[in-house]
Length: 92
Image 1 (cartoon, rainbow, N blue to C red):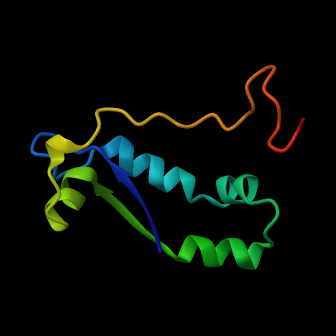
Image 2: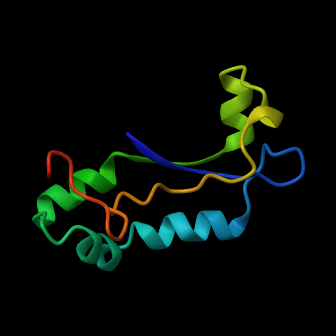
């Protein structure tokens, strides 16, 4: 099962039209084919069939009794590339 989680408007329980547009555009045949070129058309269709929709982080927090205010303002991705000059594990 897959879905998008977006930040909601106002009280956070409603999502914006651009979020819905993004979800719709992501599921087009062209987008799926370019994102999943290693999958055949039947597999791509199965992946799309598992997409359930869009929800908001605020709804997720309410549903699972999480403190919305305790969530980080921003999430940074981890750069897993080795630092310049760093030795690989096990290298001497």
